Amino acid sequence: MTTLTEGRHAGGFLVWETSRDYTRETVTLTSGAGKLDPGTVLGKITTGGKFTQLAPAASNGSQNAAGILWGPADATAADAAAVAVLRGPAIVNRNDLVWPEGATEPQITAATAALAALGILLR
Image (tube, rainbow, N blue to C red):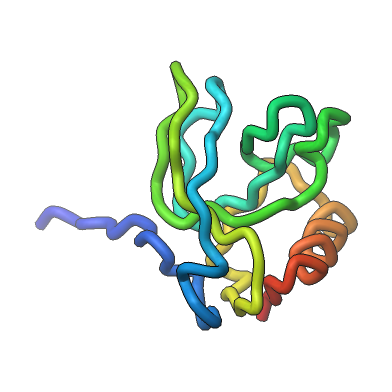
């Protein structure tokens, strides 16, 4: 029998938000960010204002959590438009978020605090 695996759903990480027209915005993911799943924690590159997956070791702004990707996006070969939750009030399921490979607990704690400062609470 074939085993089916269900992937992540757009917005599947979201528990509650005040208004999707307030909490979400269309953003530009920078070329080279790759294929990103819903729930990926994003950082915003200071120069140019594009987003990419959170990169705790970076020094270009993407080391600071700035939002959460709403749906799947592919920015492998070119910039891509995507929807992200950028502000609250919103509550998300922390277990459904996608963190960078190798992220440490202190880095995740810092990112959690940065998201909380935006009104995005992890539960």
